[in-house]
Image 1: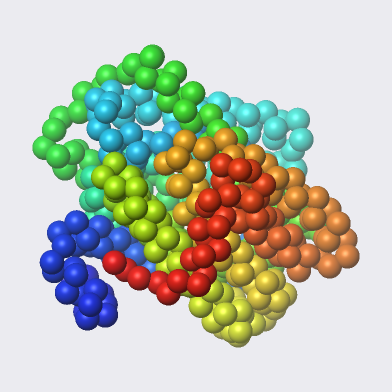
Image 2: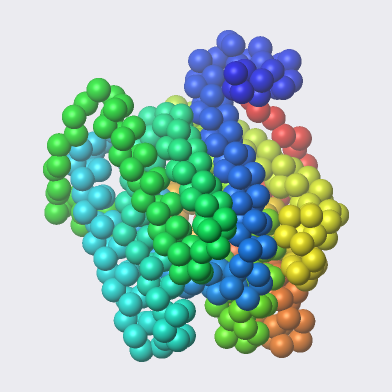
Length: 446
């Protein structure tokens, strides 16, 4: 019903093309499923998150956000960059699927264990106090459930987003009920940290259930390959560094604010990031759904491949620009409505931070272009530049402007990483100019 409503909102030309072209219909249906799930998730997450933030207050909410950011820094290398190439390999079909999935699972579980042990060692030597350390380690257990990303990649490659959606919605509803119950029972901050781990566990259980139920009617047997593992690591190593660096300039803000300003400031900034970063799902969902079609088009005709990339850039840029304008103008009102006046500083931060979504959109699409062209190392180098720039700007701007300075640092770093750095390298300049031309091209769904 909801999918039919979404399709009815398409322009007439797009609806006609939808009915004529089976390939377009397949990928549009997949995208609509993913968008529906993400819209529902962000709506529920914002409402429940606002309720939790009001209950905990800026200081406790700031500590919880800091713990999640610190865990994310260590967990960013747990996947070993494998999910970035897994969809491509599954779509190409050159590798036996059971062997590919089994090998990826072993590598990711090993990476998760190493990441958790590294987090525990860091806490042991550079702890933040008994209570804070306990919360960080509890949330850190969620790293061990990141292997669910393998099953998500499988569903993406099969263009079966409905299973991702059903798993995610089930997890979301259970999580929401649990958090509302915790608020009603006046639970402690530690209990909320257990709830965060429970979220990851329920999502993994949903993925496993639908994978066993579907799996194209096949029974995948465990088939680990040491040779394949070596090849996967060799291909994905730029993404290990890139994933770490991306997490640094996406999450290091809260860590630095904690060190330089305290939990209260982290709570204010985290509210703005939740409202701004929550919309990053849009480009990620669209690109994740359409990427198999882009990979396949490169095999058929390079002109079709480049045309699809250009239309993708244009659509993402215009969508994020419109979103940034709307949220930027309403930022103070939205924060006051959802979180209350105790988080009033977050409105000014959101007004600046939301513009980073434009460059996040560009970065998501150009990152897939780099992967398709075999230029992953340039993505890692650009991300390194952005991470160093972000940390450096934070050190300069936080003492002078507080959390507003952090928002500006994030915006500048995102712009350099996703767009301007592409101009530095000869092999990536075609992408820079293609993105620039896309600004002058009206979006199209065809």
